[in-house]
Image (cartoon, rainbow, N blue to C red):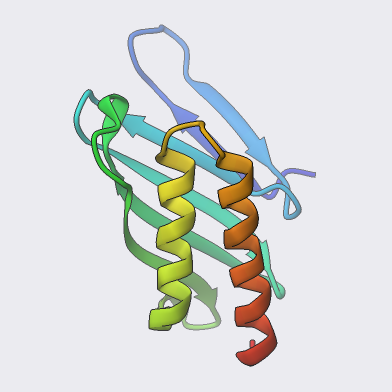
Length: 124
């Protein structure tokens, strides 16, 4: 069952939509040649989260910059502050996603291991 929905308009006469579940989440990226924006929505620990990024656009001339992450609370959306260690892992993951294809799997495994190590020493 759909929990998230993405919609977009542009030159086409119809609005494009995509749905995501609590398990899959959704991700959308709107961009020009040199700058863009990406939003990711996901569900974890019975809470909805939204992360916002400024991106390099289609030119891909720099790494995405994380702007903020929010989670839904009983009082509405609240900003989630990542620790410096976790933010470094997030930034490294963005570098891999936006970087060259060479050794991408090996570099992604490094980030996954960093997340495992982080979880083992940091209470969630």
